Length: 201
Length: 201
DNA sequence: CTCTTATTATAGGGATCCCTATTTAATTTA
DNA sequence: TAAATTAAATAGGGATCCCTATAATAAGAG
Image (tube, rainbow over all chains, first blue to last red):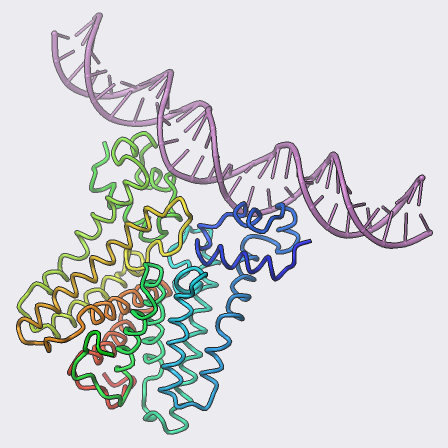
Protein backbone atom coordinates (compact mmCIF):
# COMPACT_ATOMS: atom_id res chain seq x y z
CA UNK A 1 0.00 0.00 0.00
CA UNK A 2 1.26 3.46 -0.95
CA UNK A 3 2.40 5.71 1.87
CA UNK A 4 0.39 8.90 1.94
CA UNK A 5 3.36 11.22 2.27
CA UNK A 6 5.19 9.49 -0.55
CA UNK A 7 2.13 9.97 -2.72
CA UNK A 8 1.88 13.63 -1.81
CA UNK A 9 5.56 14.13 -2.51
CA UNK A 10 5.05 12.76 -6.02
CA UNK A 11 1.94 14.86 -6.53
CA UNK A 12 3.79 17.99 -5.42
CA UNK A 13 6.53 17.34 -7.92
CA UNK A 14 4.11 16.88 -10.82
CA UNK A 15 1.80 19.78 -9.97
CA UNK A 16 4.79 22.03 -9.31
CA UNK A 17 6.34 21.23 -12.66
CA UNK A 18 3.24 21.10 -14.84
CA UNK A 19 0.61 23.08 -12.99
CA UNK A 20 -2.89 21.97 -12.14
CA UNK A 21 -4.29 21.90 -15.65
CA UNK A 22 -1.10 20.44 -17.09
CA UNK A 23 -1.15 17.43 -14.78
CA UNK A 24 -3.57 14.58 -15.46
CA UNK A 25 -4.78 11.97 -13.03
CA UNK A 26 -3.18 9.43 -15.33
CA UNK A 27 0.17 11.18 -14.83
CA UNK A 28 -0.37 11.03 -11.08
CA UNK A 29 -1.40 7.39 -10.82
CA UNK A 30 1.39 6.32 -13.12
CA UNK A 31 4.04 8.24 -11.16
CA UNK A 32 2.71 6.89 -7.87
CA UNK A 33 2.48 3.35 -9.22
CA UNK A 34 -1.14 2.97 -8.23
CA UNK A 35 -4.48 2.54 -9.99
CA UNK A 36 -7.10 5.23 -10.26
CA UNK A 37 -9.42 3.83 -7.56
CA UNK A 38 -6.57 3.92 -5.04
CA UNK A 39 -5.86 7.56 -5.82
CA UNK A 40 -9.50 8.49 -5.37
CA UNK A 41 -9.88 6.54 -2.15
CA UNK A 42 -6.75 8.16 -0.71
CA UNK A 43 -7.16 11.73 -1.89
CA UNK A 44 -10.79 12.20 -2.91
CA UNK A 45 -10.43 13.96 -6.23
CA UNK A 46 -7.87 15.71 -8.37
CA UNK A 47 -8.75 19.07 -6.84
CA UNK A 48 -8.61 17.69 -3.31
CA UNK A 49 -5.25 16.13 -4.04
CA UNK A 50 -3.97 19.46 -5.35
CA UNK A 51 -5.12 21.16 -2.17
CA UNK A 52 -3.36 18.56 -0.04
CA UNK A 53 -0.24 18.74 -2.19
CA UNK A 54 -0.13 22.52 -1.74
CA UNK A 55 -0.43 22.18 2.03
CA UNK A 56 2.20 19.49 2.07
CA UNK A 57 4.62 21.50 -0.02
CA UNK A 58 4.08 24.73 1.88
CA UNK A 59 4.69 23.01 5.20
CA UNK A 60 7.98 21.70 3.88
CA UNK A 61 9.26 24.63 1.86
CA UNK A 62 8.30 27.62 3.97
CA UNK A 63 9.09 26.58 7.54
CA UNK A 64 12.63 27.97 7.47
CA UNK A 65 11.64 31.30 5.99
CA UNK A 66 8.78 31.72 8.43
CA UNK A 67 11.20 31.15 11.30
CA UNK A 68 13.40 33.86 9.88
CA UNK A 69 10.47 36.28 9.90
CA UNK A 70 9.45 35.25 13.40
CA UNK A 71 12.97 35.65 14.77
CA UNK A 72 14.24 38.75 16.53
CA UNK A 73 16.54 39.67 13.68
CA UNK A 74 16.28 43.28 12.53
CA UNK A 75 13.51 43.51 9.99
CA UNK A 76 15.78 44.45 7.11
CA UNK A 77 18.02 41.48 7.68
CA UNK A 78 15.10 39.15 8.23
CA UNK A 79 13.62 40.33 4.93
CA UNK A 80 16.92 39.81 3.17
CA UNK A 81 17.30 36.26 4.43
CA UNK A 82 13.64 35.60 3.73
CA UNK A 83 14.01 36.61 0.10
CA UNK A 84 17.29 34.74 -0.30
CA UNK A 85 15.61 31.62 1.01
CA UNK A 86 12.88 32.00 -1.59
CA UNK A 87 15.48 32.45 -4.33
CA UNK A 88 17.07 29.23 -3.14
CA UNK A 89 13.68 27.52 -3.22
CA UNK A 90 13.12 28.73 -6.78
CA UNK A 91 16.35 27.15 -8.00
CA UNK A 92 16.75 23.86 -6.13
CA UNK A 93 18.82 21.42 -8.17
CA UNK A 94 16.51 18.41 -8.28
CA UNK A 95 13.19 20.17 -8.03
CA UNK A 96 11.03 22.05 -10.51
CA UNK A 97 11.93 25.67 -11.17
CA UNK A 98 10.15 28.54 -9.51
CA UNK A 99 7.56 28.44 -6.75
CA UNK A 100 4.62 26.06 -6.72
CA UNK A 101 2.28 28.77 -5.45
CA UNK A 102 3.55 32.22 -6.46
CA UNK A 103 2.71 31.93 -10.14
CA UNK A 104 0.21 29.07 -10.17
CA UNK A 105 -3.18 29.03 -11.90
CA UNK A 106 -3.15 32.70 -12.88
CA UNK A 107 -4.93 31.85 -16.10
CA UNK A 108 -7.39 28.97 -16.10
CA UNK A 109 -10.46 27.39 -17.66
CA UNK A 110 -13.77 28.45 -16.16
CA UNK A 111 -14.29 25.08 -14.51
CA UNK A 112 -11.10 25.56 -12.50
CA UNK A 113 -12.02 28.87 -10.92
CA UNK A 114 -12.18 27.32 -7.46
CA UNK A 115 -8.63 26.05 -7.83
CA UNK A 116 -7.46 29.50 -8.88
CA UNK A 117 -9.23 31.01 -5.92
CA UNK A 118 -7.31 28.61 -3.72
CA UNK A 119 -3.86 29.62 -4.93
CA UNK A 120 -4.82 33.30 -4.91
CA UNK A 121 -5.79 32.97 -1.25
CA UNK A 122 -2.44 31.38 -0.45
CA UNK A 123 -0.64 34.24 -2.15
CA UNK A 124 -2.70 36.79 -0.23
CA UNK A 125 -1.88 34.99 3.01
CA UNK A 126 1.78 35.19 2.13
CA UNK A 127 1.53 38.94 1.58
CA UNK A 128 -0.26 39.33 4.90
CA UNK A 129 2.51 37.42 6.64
CA UNK A 130 5.06 39.87 5.27
CA UNK A 131 2.87 42.82 6.17
CA UNK A 132 2.50 41.54 9.73
CA UNK A 133 6.30 41.45 10.07
CA UNK A 134 6.53 45.01 8.79
CA UNK A 135 3.80 46.13 11.17
CA UNK A 136 5.80 44.57 13.98
CA UNK A 137 8.78 46.57 12.78
CA UNK A 138 6.74 49.74 13.24
CA UNK A 139 5.81 48.74 16.77
CA UNK A 140 9.42 48.04 17.55
CA UNK A 141 10.53 51.37 16.17
CA UNK A 142 12.36 49.97 13.18
CA UNK A 143 10.06 51.66 10.68
CA UNK A 144 8.32 55.05 10.79
CA UNK A 145 4.76 54.70 12.14
CA UNK A 146 3.13 55.99 8.99
CA UNK A 147 4.87 53.46 6.75
CA UNK A 148 2.61 51.92 4.09
CA UNK A 149 3.33 48.33 5.07
CA UNK A 150 0.67 47.01 2.71
CA UNK A 151 2.37 48.44 -0.36
CA UNK A 152 5.73 47.38 1.00
CA UNK A 153 4.50 43.81 1.41
CA UNK A 154 2.92 43.73 -2.04
CA UNK A 155 6.10 45.15 -3.54
CA UNK A 156 8.22 42.33 -2.16
CA UNK A 157 5.40 39.98 -3.09
CA UNK A 158 5.80 41.15 -6.67
CA UNK A 159 9.53 40.49 -6.45
CA UNK A 160 8.78 36.98 -5.23
CA UNK A 161 6.37 36.40 -8.10
CA UNK A 162 8.81 37.84 -10.61
CA UNK A 163 11.56 35.59 -9.28
CA UNK A 164 9.34 32.55 -9.64
CA UNK A 165 8.47 33.45 -13.22
CA UNK A 166 12.08 34.10 -14.14
CA UNK A 167 13.22 30.90 -12.48
CA UNK A 168 10.66 29.03 -14.60
CA UNK A 169 12.25 30.73 -17.60
CA UNK A 170 15.67 29.48 -16.56
CA UNK A 171 17.16 32.19 -14.33
CA UNK A 172 19.92 30.97 -12.03
CA UNK A 173 20.21 31.55 -8.29
CA UNK A 174 22.82 34.30 -8.60
CA UNK A 175 20.66 36.25 -11.02
CA UNK A 176 17.72 36.11 -8.63
CA UNK A 177 19.90 37.33 -5.78
CA UNK A 178 21.15 40.28 -7.79
CA UNK A 179 17.50 41.08 -8.33
CA UNK A 180 16.85 40.85 -4.59
CA UNK A 181 19.79 43.10 -3.77
CA UNK A 182 18.37 45.75 -6.04
CA UNK A 183 14.87 45.33 -4.62
CA UNK A 184 16.26 45.84 -1.13
CA UNK A 185 17.45 49.31 -2.06
CA UNK A 186 13.77 50.28 -2.13
CA UNK A 187 13.59 49.61 1.59
CA UNK A 188 12.61 52.77 3.50
CA UNK A 189 15.63 54.63 4.73
CA UNK A 190 18.11 52.32 3.07
CA UNK A 191 20.92 53.93 1.15
CA UNK A 192 19.76 54.42 -2.41
CA UNK A 193 22.29 52.96 -4.82
CA UNK A 194 24.46 55.66 -6.32
CA UNK A 195 25.00 53.08 -9.03
CA UNK A 196 24.10 49.48 -9.72
CA UNK A 197 27.42 47.96 -10.60
CA UNK A 198 27.82 44.80 -12.54
CA UNK A 199 29.99 41.85 -11.71
CA UNK A 200 31.87 43.33 -8.79
CA UNK A 201 29.85 42.10 -5.84
CA UNK B 1 -16.89 34.61 -43.88
CA UNK B 2 -15.14 35.50 -40.61
CA UNK B 3 -12.73 38.41 -40.73
CA UNK B 4 -9.28 37.33 -39.70
CA UNK B 5 -8.68 40.21 -37.29
CA UNK B 6 -12.04 39.68 -35.65
CA UNK B 7 -11.15 36.05 -35.14
CA UNK B 8 -7.78 36.94 -33.67
CA UNK B 9 -9.37 39.47 -31.37
CA UNK B 10 -11.65 36.77 -30.00
CA UNK B 11 -8.77 34.32 -29.67
CA UNK B 12 -6.72 36.91 -27.79
CA UNK B 13 -9.51 37.45 -25.35
CA UNK B 14 -9.95 33.74 -24.63
CA UNK B 15 -6.26 32.86 -24.43
CA UNK B 16 -5.60 35.95 -22.28
CA UNK B 17 -8.32 35.01 -19.83
CA UNK B 18 -7.89 31.25 -19.69
CA UNK B 19 -4.36 30.61 -20.87
CA UNK B 20 -3.26 28.21 -23.56
CA UNK B 21 -4.11 24.98 -21.77
CA UNK B 22 -7.33 26.40 -20.35
CA UNK B 23 -8.71 27.31 -23.76
CA UNK B 24 -10.12 24.58 -26.01
CA UNK B 25 -10.60 24.70 -29.74
CA UNK B 26 -14.30 24.19 -29.04
CA UNK B 27 -14.26 27.40 -26.94
CA UNK B 28 -12.59 29.20 -29.81
CA UNK B 29 -14.87 28.02 -32.61
CA UNK B 30 -17.94 28.66 -30.52
CA UNK B 31 -16.86 32.21 -29.60
CA UNK B 32 -15.95 32.95 -33.23
CA UNK B 33 -19.18 31.43 -34.52
CA UNK B 34 -17.41 29.13 -36.93
CA UNK B 35 -16.92 25.40 -37.38
CA UNK B 36 -13.70 23.56 -36.65
CA UNK B 37 -12.61 23.17 -40.30
CA UNK B 38 -12.84 26.92 -40.80
CA UNK B 39 -10.62 27.56 -37.79
CA UNK B 40 -8.03 25.12 -39.03
CA UNK B 41 -8.04 26.47 -42.56
CA UNK B 42 -7.64 30.03 -41.28
CA UNK B 43 -5.11 29.52 -38.51
CA UNK B 44 -3.49 26.11 -39.02
CA UNK B 45 -3.63 24.67 -35.54
CA UNK B 46 -4.33 25.64 -31.96
CA UNK B 47 -0.65 26.36 -31.35
CA UNK B 48 -0.35 28.40 -34.54
CA UNK B 49 -3.43 30.37 -33.58
CA UNK B 50 -1.95 31.06 -30.17
CA UNK B 51 1.23 32.33 -31.79
CA UNK B 52 -0.75 34.60 -34.08
CA UNK B 53 -2.93 35.80 -31.22
CA UNK B 54 0.18 36.70 -29.22
CA UNK B 55 1.59 38.68 -32.13
CA UNK B 56 -1.73 40.38 -32.70
CA UNK B 57 -2.11 41.32 -29.05
CA UNK B 58 1.47 42.51 -28.64
CA UNK B 59 1.19 44.72 -31.69
CA UNK B 60 -1.90 46.33 -30.22
CA UNK B 61 -1.01 46.55 -26.55
CA UNK B 62 2.65 47.49 -26.61
CA UNK B 63 2.95 50.11 -29.35
CA UNK B 64 2.37 53.05 -27.00
CA UNK B 65 4.81 51.88 -24.39
CA UNK B 66 7.49 51.15 -27.00
CA UNK B 67 7.10 54.68 -28.30
CA UNK B 68 7.65 55.95 -24.80
CA UNK B 69 10.89 54.03 -24.56
CA UNK B 70 12.00 55.16 -28.00
CA UNK B 71 11.26 58.82 -27.25
CA UNK B 72 13.83 61.33 -26.09
CA UNK B 73 12.34 61.56 -22.64
CA UNK B 74 14.83 61.21 -19.78
CA UNK B 75 15.22 57.52 -19.06
CA UNK B 76 13.73 57.72 -15.56
CA UNK B 77 10.58 59.40 -16.82
CA UNK B 78 10.33 57.09 -19.80
CA UNK B 79 10.58 54.12 -17.44
CA UNK B 80 7.93 55.60 -15.19
CA UNK B 81 5.47 56.13 -18.02
CA UNK B 82 6.36 52.72 -19.46
CA UNK B 83 5.50 50.98 -16.20
CA UNK B 84 2.35 53.04 -15.70
CA UNK B 85 1.19 52.06 -19.16
CA UNK B 86 1.69 48.40 -18.28
CA UNK B 87 -0.28 48.87 -15.06
CA UNK B 88 -3.07 50.36 -17.16
CA UNK B 89 -2.88 47.41 -19.52
CA UNK B 90 -3.12 44.99 -16.59
CA UNK B 91 -6.35 46.58 -15.36
CA UNK B 92 -8.36 47.53 -18.44
CA UNK B 93 -12.08 47.56 -17.68
CA UNK B 94 -13.42 45.24 -20.34
CA UNK B 95 -10.42 43.03 -20.83
CA UNK B 96 -8.96 40.13 -18.90
CA UNK B 97 -6.78 40.98 -15.90
CA UNK B 98 -3.03 41.00 -16.05
CA UNK B 99 -0.80 40.60 -19.06
CA UNK B 100 -1.28 37.96 -21.73
CA UNK B 101 2.45 37.27 -21.93
CA UNK B 102 4.15 38.16 -18.64
CA UNK B 103 2.82 35.26 -16.64
CA UNK B 104 1.70 32.85 -19.36
CA UNK B 105 2.54 29.14 -19.61
CA UNK B 106 4.99 29.11 -16.71
CA UNK B 107 3.81 25.65 -15.73
CA UNK B 108 2.69 23.31 -18.48
CA UNK B 109 2.22 19.72 -19.63
CA UNK B 110 5.19 18.18 -21.39
CA UNK B 111 3.47 18.26 -24.75
CA UNK B 112 3.20 22.06 -24.54
CA UNK B 113 6.88 22.75 -24.02
CA UNK B 114 7.14 24.49 -27.38
CA UNK B 115 4.36 26.88 -26.43
CA UNK B 116 6.10 27.67 -23.14
CA UNK B 117 9.33 28.27 -25.01
CA UNK B 118 7.44 30.74 -27.17
CA UNK B 119 6.16 32.89 -24.31
CA UNK B 120 9.51 32.68 -22.52
CA UNK B 121 11.21 34.07 -25.61
CA UNK B 122 8.74 36.94 -25.73
CA UNK B 123 9.46 37.76 -22.09
CA UNK B 124 13.20 37.67 -22.74
CA UNK B 125 12.75 39.98 -25.71
CA UNK B 126 10.84 42.36 -23.47
CA UNK B 127 13.68 42.39 -20.95
CA UNK B 128 16.18 43.03 -23.73
CA UNK B 129 14.12 45.98 -24.93
CA UNK B 130 14.30 47.52 -21.48
CA UNK B 131 18.01 46.77 -21.22
CA UNK B 132 18.63 48.41 -24.57
CA UNK B 133 16.96 51.58 -23.32
CA UNK B 134 19.12 51.53 -20.21
CA UNK B 135 22.25 50.99 -22.28
CA UNK B 136 21.26 54.00 -24.34
CA UNK B 137 20.97 55.92 -21.08
CA UNK B 138 24.59 55.05 -20.34
CA UNK B 139 25.67 56.29 -23.74
CA UNK B 140 23.79 59.51 -23.20
CA UNK B 141 25.33 60.04 -19.79
CA UNK B 142 22.14 59.47 -17.83
CA UNK B 143 23.51 56.43 -16.05
CA UNK B 144 27.01 55.62 -14.82
CA UNK B 145 28.92 53.58 -17.40
CA UNK B 146 29.41 50.59 -15.14
CA UNK B 147 25.69 50.25 -14.40
CA UNK B 148 24.44 46.65 -14.46
CA UNK B 149 21.68 47.26 -16.96
CA UNK B 150 20.90 43.58 -17.24
CA UNK B 151 19.98 43.29 -13.57
CA UNK B 152 18.15 46.58 -13.76
CA UNK B 153 16.06 45.33 -16.68
CA UNK B 154 15.33 42.02 -15.01
CA UNK B 155 14.35 43.82 -11.83
CA UNK B 156 11.73 45.90 -13.59
CA UNK B 157 10.80 42.78 -15.54
CA UNK B 158 10.06 41.12 -12.22
CA UNK B 159 7.92 44.08 -11.22
CA UNK B 160 6.01 43.72 -14.48
CA UNK B 161 5.47 40.02 -13.84
CA UNK B 162 4.45 40.66 -10.25
CA UNK B 163 1.95 43.27 -11.37
CA UNK B 164 0.44 40.86 -13.87
CA UNK B 165 0.08 38.15 -11.24
CA UNK B 166 -1.46 40.54 -8.72
CA UNK B 167 -3.81 41.97 -11.32
CA UNK B 168 -4.98 38.41 -12.04
CA UNK B 169 -5.60 38.12 -8.32
CA UNK B 170 -7.74 41.25 -8.38
CA UNK B 171 -5.37 44.15 -7.65
CA UNK B 172 -6.66 47.54 -8.84
CA UNK B 173 -4.81 50.08 -10.94
CA UNK B 174 -3.96 52.35 -8.01
CA UNK B 175 -2.44 49.51 -6.06
CA UNK B 176 -0.20 48.58 -8.99
CA UNK B 177 0.93 52.18 -9.31
CA UNK B 178 1.85 52.40 -5.64
CA UNK B 179 3.94 49.33 -6.30
CA UNK B 180 5.60 51.02 -9.27
CA UNK B 181 6.35 54.16 -7.27
CA UNK B 182 8.15 52.06 -4.72
CA UNK B 183 10.02 50.10 -7.37
CA UNK B 184 11.22 53.36 -8.90
CA UNK B 185 13.01 54.25 -5.67
CA UNK B 186 15.44 51.47 -6.56
CA UNK B 187 16.53 53.45 -9.60
CA UNK B 188 20.26 54.27 -9.41
CA UNK B 189 20.83 57.66 -7.89
CA UNK B 190 17.19 58.28 -7.11
CA UNK B 191 16.38 59.56 -3.68
CA UNK B 192 15.83 56.58 -1.44
CA UNK B 193 12.53 56.92 0.39
CA UNK B 194 13.06 58.13 3.92
CA UNK B 195 9.67 56.57 4.48
CA UNK B 196 6.95 54.95 2.42
CA UNK B 197 3.86 56.80 3.49
CA UNK B 198 0.41 55.48 3.09
CA UNK B 199 -2.60 57.24 1.67
CA UNK B 200 -1.05 60.68 1.23
CA UNK B 201 0.00 60.58 -2.38
C1' DC C 1 -10.50 -24.87 5.23
C1' DT C 2 -14.24 -21.46 4.81
C1' DC C 3 -16.05 -17.20 5.15
C1' DT C 4 -15.69 -12.37 5.73
C1' DT C 5 -13.22 -8.28 5.00
C1' DA C 6 -9.88 -5.40 2.89
C1' DT C 7 -7.19 -4.16 -0.96
C1' DT C 8 -5.92 -4.00 -5.85
C1' DA C 9 -6.65 -4.38 -10.69
C1' DT C 10 -9.51 -4.32 -14.78
C1' DA C 11 -12.63 -2.33 -17.53
C1' DG C 12 -15.17 1.26 -19.04
C1' DG C 13 -18.73 5.44 -18.91
C1' DG C 14 -19.55 9.75 -20.44
C1' DA C 15 -17.42 13.80 -21.66
C1' DT C 16 -13.99 16.37 -23.96
C1' DC C 17 -9.50 16.86 -26.28
C1' DC C 18 -7.39 18.39 -31.22
C1' DC C 19 -8.13 17.72 -35.75
C1' DT C 20 -9.99 16.04 -40.46
C1' DA C 21 -12.59 13.29 -44.13
C1' DT C 22 -16.71 13.74 -46.19
C1' DT C 23 -20.95 15.75 -47.31
C1' DT C 24 -23.95 19.61 -48.16
C1' DA C 25 -24.77 24.25 -49.63
C1' DA C 26 -23.68 28.51 -51.87
C1' DT C 27 -21.31 31.02 -55.34
C1' DT C 28 -19.02 31.82 -59.57
C1' DT C 29 -17.90 30.70 -64.35
C1' DA C 30 -18.99 29.08 -68.87
C1' DT D 1 -29.06 26.60 -67.23
C1' DA D 2 -25.08 23.45 -66.40
C1' DA D 3 -20.60 22.85 -64.72
C1' DA D 4 -16.87 24.18 -61.86
C1' DT D 5 -15.34 26.22 -57.87
C1' DT D 6 -15.55 27.81 -53.23
C1' DA D 7 -17.37 27.88 -48.66
C1' DA D 8 -19.65 25.83 -44.70
C1' DA D 9 -21.65 22.21 -41.96
C1' DT D 10 -21.96 17.58 -40.37
C1' DA D 11 -20.04 13.77 -38.56
C1' DG D 12 -16.68 11.39 -36.41
C1' DG D 13 -11.68 9.31 -35.44
C1' DG D 14 -8.55 8.35 -32.13
C1' DA D 15 -6.88 9.89 -27.97
C1' DT D 16 -7.39 11.58 -23.43
C1' DC D 17 -10.01 13.78 -19.67
C1' DC D 18 -11.83 12.68 -14.53
C1' DC D 19 -13.91 9.28 -12.16
C1' DT D 20 -16.25 4.75 -10.73
C1' DA D 21 -18.71 0.14 -11.01
C1' DT D 22 -17.36 -4.29 -11.07
C1' DA D 23 -14.24 -8.16 -10.83
C1' DA D 24 -10.18 -10.33 -9.12
C1' DT D 25 -6.90 -10.97 -5.52
C1' DA D 26 -5.01 -11.01 -0.88
C1' DA D 27 -5.37 -10.97 3.98
C1' DG D 28 -7.56 -11.89 8.37
C1' DA D 29 -11.26 -14.33 11.40
C1' DG D 30 -13.86 -18.23 12.81
